[in-house]
Image (tube, rainbow, N blue to C red):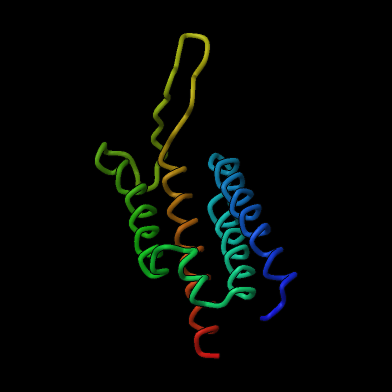
Length: 139
């Protein structure tokens, strides 16, 4: 699209949408849907930028091939389920690491649900952006 206004606004909008998608990913890491909805918001921001600037700059914004993002995301999601199996727990059982824990405060809780959500995030971003890039390149 050859619109100066759309091109200018898309640069601002993509940054805001990516930042908001990371907020959704982090906020939802203990609740269902953080990785999926965060990935959709990130993909939507990348798509807006791609519609304004074209598929070549959209690929440049991603920095990685969308298929590789999907592969890494799938490996992270499956890996987060396999980790508990190594300790004798069930598949996708949550495992937690508490950073900075004291007797009165549990600190920062990081766990396998966050790894799973990051994997889902990457799968959604790579899958949706890859489909849109493929459709844009055919046009």
